[in-house]
View 1 (spheres, rainbow, N blue to C red):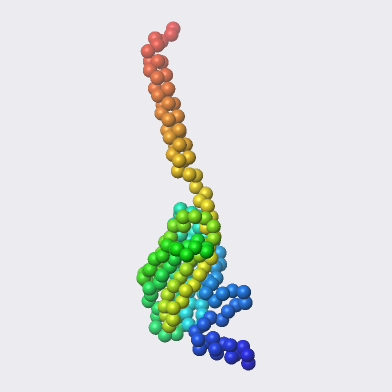
View 2: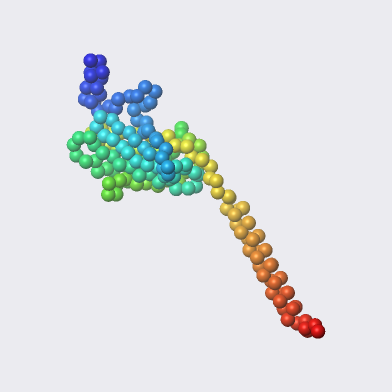
Amino acid sequence: MLLACLLLATGATGQPLETPGQPPDLVKIHPQEESLELSWSDTEDRLQGSVRPLVPHTGEPLHVILHVGSFEGAEFNGPLTLSLREKGATHATSVTVTRDGRYWRASFTPESSGPHVLDMSFRTTRHKLLHASLQVEPSPKVPRLVFWSILGAGLVLLLGYSVRNLLREGQARRQPPTR
């Protein structure tokens, strides 16, 4: 009986049922083969989507694809505001996106490694602000200076080897044949 009253009260207010230990505005993240799958729902709406790549890195684009749907009533058409920020930071990179076909799409490029939060905000019957925790790893790429230095050294070695071979061919042509 108590559970039925809780369900009725939750349905009447449009508030999500809280899972013990998990805030109602926290989006669940499930790692898949190539992406992080996002899911959230309350009694009125649901959000599903993905974040690619599976392991976000600094300096590399992070692609977010979302779908927001209502359980009843009119279809949600947006807009959606997405923000990516470092955990604990008050400023963020934000974009407001409109629906592109069935989905809302955005891209971010994290500038630092560590814990980040993807905020998703939209309004259906009331304003909803959801959060997904992401871990951004340092970029595994070789720094540009090292890359260009190695490339330059390789080109100098190739040029030197080519000049050496050309000089050897020229010397071999000048020598008279031996009998």
